[in-house]
Image 1 (cartoon, rainbow, N blue to C red):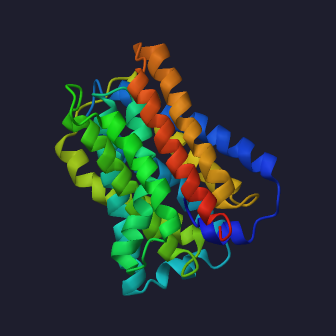
Image 2: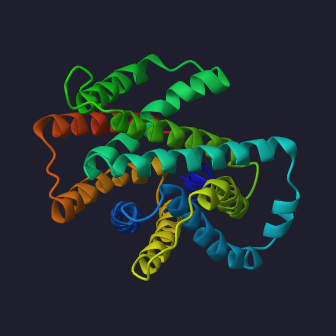
Length: 299
C-alpha cells in the first residue's frame, strides 16, 4: 500500500516473483496477527501497537542514510504534506487499535476478512474527499462486496456484536490510510512516506501505551519484538512486490491473509468459520477483485 502507484508505474515485469513475495508477506501478516492475539491475553493493545511502530521506526532509521536525498525530502516538509502524513498516521493507528481489539473477541478469519473490506470503502472516500463520482461500472462490485459484509455481520441475527463493527471500522481506517497514501505518492519519496508512517504512528500511540503500560513477562518480550519485526518485514515485502507487478495484479494476493488467518485460528484456538462466514467472505473477495480489475488499466 505504500507508494503503490509510483512503484507500479516503474516496475520491471516479473509477476511470479511479485506473487511469491506477496504470499510471503501474507504469511507473515497472519503470524503477526496471531502473535498479537496471543499477546492480548497479557498486555494492552495500546502497548502492542506502540511497540510495533517503535520497532518499525528503529528499523527504518538506517534506511535514511542509504537513500540519496531522503533526508532532504524529510526536512522539506510542507504543511499540506504534513497534514497528509498525519492523516495517514492517525488512521493507521486507529485501524490497528480497532483490528487488534476485534481479534481478541471474534474469530481471527472474520476479523481479518472485515479488515480486508477496505478496498470497498476507497471509492466512497474518494467521492467524499475528491468529489469524484463513482463510475456506474463500479457500483455492482461495491454492492456485492457490501452484501458480503452484511452476511458476515448478520445484523438481524444473534451473533452480531460491536466487536464485528469494530472490525469493520478497522477497514474504514485502513481505507483512509490507502487514500492518503495515494495522495502522497508522486509528491514525496517512498522513504519519506515510510519514515513518517512509523514516526507519527509511534507518536500517536505512545501516550495511551504509557497510560496502559504493564510489566512484560520474559515470555512476552520475544513475541512482541517478533510482531514488530514481522510487521516491518511484511510492509517491506509488499513494497518490493510492487517493483515487479502492478498493484492491481498484486493486491488480490493479500486475501490469502484471510486463508492463513483462518488456518491459524482453527489450529491454535479451534475457531471454525460457519457457512455464513464463508459465504460473506466469498462475496467480499469477489467485490474487491472486481474493483481491482476495473482499476487494472491504470495501476
